[in-house]
Length: 428
Ligand SMILES: *Cc1c(COP(=O)(O)O)cnc(C)c1O
Image 1 (cartoon, helix red, strand yellow):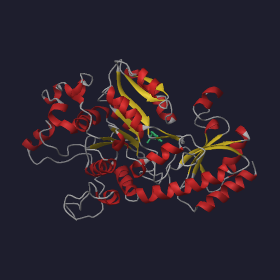
Image 2: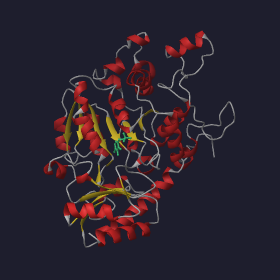
Image 3: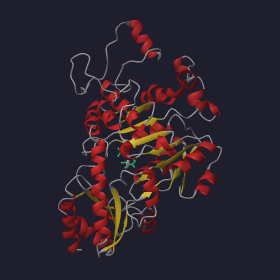
Image 4: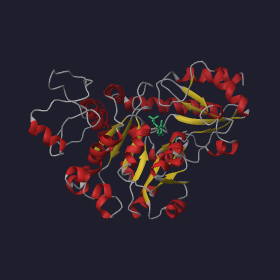
């Protein structure tokens, strides 16, 4: 093997970003549970503060455990840099912060995680940021919705609550024509199943809470920059192209090239928004990443078996899983997700609301809770929980009608999951 042979995905899951601890030789990445770092001398401190030298100052900005996570996820997604955040939702604000300003808007898919619909539809208005939700299956509508104030295009690769696969190449072509960055939330697929940067995405934004950590243990998020977007091609991104007064007039794009967005997100985003990831959580997520591809393979195999079983059940109306031939997204899943169509999908029950409630209450192995991407199998009846405040019409639009349950298939023995569902469905 020559020195420049790129390392395989599984090797990078375990080694990217990490080395034995220089101080102690510890082989596993230590949890650097410290708020701050001692400077070598006054000149060293001054260089760090003026960005002339990269190093550790204070854990709101950078932390050695968190840095390993950042390097590892950047490597797995095929990016040049990454910024970890306190949660997936904190990562989303971090991802948008260098691009947006009052009066600017995000063009977003109308098929997004419910929490993101709230964040984009309500919370960001207070920053003066707007959003336009459009069906990303309608490329003409996507093109038509771009205006002079649009600063980012946003979608999920595999959309939560499941079943929807975005045509990332088609959307990327539109983004490139408009000279706008395409941001893809890759939480549901992870880099083990799909690397959207290889299909033209500019920035990846994911919750590490889900499959990356993989045990329902630690909340976190991460933003990965491909380094491919040229911020200087227009005057739309002044945060990256105009002088930053607090850094002596530094122009991030000019001075840092492909690392501009990553450095801006640390030096300004983390500094001022403060949504850093905890070293302890980064450590748990690093443990999860060591087995990511193995787990995703089994998650998908189990999900495929359970989806096929449910599709054939008399009390089930439909199953929205792109691994099934009946799915409108089956062909796209074959193209973008050859290793498996993920592990989260929705099921429509013939018996409506009461059937949904009976099913979640009748299950033993599945836990009824609001999360996905755990080693344990999970279920939620959206209409009586996450979406209960919506009108019936809005529930239906969100894919959370009274008959819908969302499943996140874990790593248990598939036959045991099917037996559990079979028993619960018999009581529906
Ligand atoms: C959970 C989730 C988020 C939000 O992540 P948190 O870590 O819960 O803040 C964003 N996008 C998708 C697709 C998710 O599933």
